[in-house]
Length: 123
Image 1 (tube, rainbow, N blue to C red):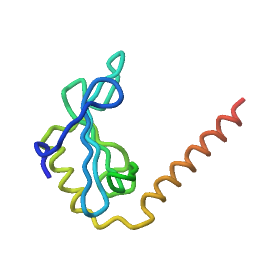
Image 2 (image 1 turned 120 degrees about the vertical axis):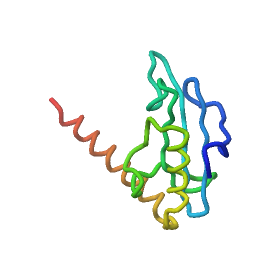
Image 3 (image 1 turned 90 degrees about the horizontal axis):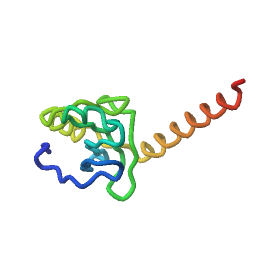
Image 4 (image 1 turned 120 degrees about the horizontal axis):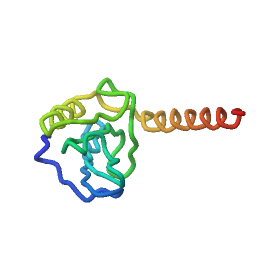
């Protein structure tokens, strides 16, 4: 898949665009460019560049994943050419396991619980 194949819709937060795509291997991507008040927004939006998050799941049930060889976070400041190259990498990943999406959700829940415990312990 290439950048020009993406179908963008208005972004739900702020002013901008978002495309969400999924591949047969159980992974996908969210590609965004948006701004909210005071110039904040997606990484690179102020320069006309794009932010990409790797997804696990399908169009009916998906989540962000930070457990691929592609990235451990979102990728920001991407040109259209870099978005296309990253989409090809995502499409080439080995098939996602049945427990991958739940593992991502469990990891985020543990992180939230740890953060809340730290906040509660703060003087």
